[in-house]
Length: 570
Figure (cartoon, rainbow, N blue to C red):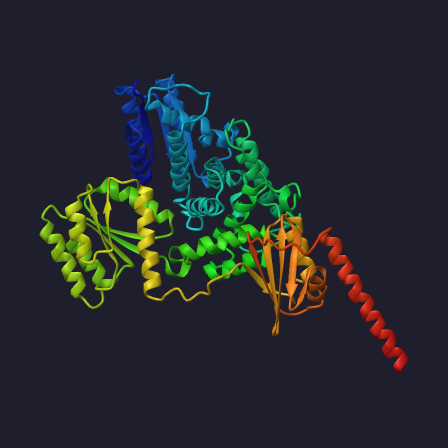
């Protein structure tokens, strides 16, 4: 039987967006703006589930819960509110923070209801998994709407994490596991005093301990849920350090789950690009440099290397100083609202107009980075608008895409022949539309030569800052397969590793152990670690770290012999 849902929120944007999303899953949805409005609906309409999105005082949500239970005792009431609202109402906390968070089981219940399916056990079908991820993504995004420091950050982090997983060729179930863990990684912060989260200066020891406790607090909130993925381990360990100096368990290297190692890099990067009360945001290049400095110490160097490749491909929408601004001219309010939220989550600013004339006036005042305009019922007017843009000196070079209600081959060909960057079909999946919008921005960045940041070629650094023995130990500890390249003045050498073990080395005409002994003498120069590279050559056998210790011993012996000879000469 088709079930009915009531969405209650004083925030019109949150209410309407969530209602559109649920209706897209085939659900019957009614909306209400407050307690009185909700009660009128409950008295006249059959409702199975009430979803309360409380952006204001949590007391309002508590009041509604009481009324709903009195009016319809058989209805479920799911509470969703911002952490600051909960923390400001101590009386509400007696229910437990869990009463204000949607559990995975509740979300699956919402999604499966459209199929008339009440089963709680068994594997979630692929479509259900995708819907689950999308709903959690939207709900977390709604929670972040009121916080300028975190708005859209969870979505961007989840997208980056998935991109890293795809670059590494990992399985789809691992992608889902890491994506969900990324979205839910900070639920434990709901129990932290708001003053600690907004502290502008250095945290006291007690405040730092409370911040660290958000990891275990988040796990406690979620551990009663029987997830079909191991995302709790990812959440618990995403603040571990590669060198073993992290928390909560001090794991190191491969002991840390791969998902947690990926999340650690993504979480740090998104945090550095976001403004905080105590500091301005970094540029993407500055953030990458910080990740590179921490590779092998705080972060898995292989993950950092893959992540840098991902960022290089998406740089056009990551730099905080140049947030892309999109102008959308379309009268389809439901489509525009969903697209606006998705683009906002991607770190873009979105201006909306309902007609081309108003859009033109806005563009003249402030040209956007991309224009999206619907094709008018009178197609000639749309092409006249395009021609006007192309003839304007300031707007002629702005990328432009048409929004069409459905695929039409003849219209698509005509549009593309006019030099339009793309023709986006509004009935397509939103993720596909957003991906194509990002591709337009990336192409425009490259076409205009605006991305002057250096192309990275692996983990790079200076031997003055990280010695060769330390680099070898990092690769050995992480069981990495990689090629380590060294250069000093006009000399260059390379060492290949297979699962952390050195198998071949060469410098000049020397190979094997002799080549490593020579490179151990280099105290200055540049190094590059390129992961995943292999060689068929085999000139080294035995324990790698023993080889390093032997090389250092020979260097010390040589230095001692030279010192003795110098003393004798004196």
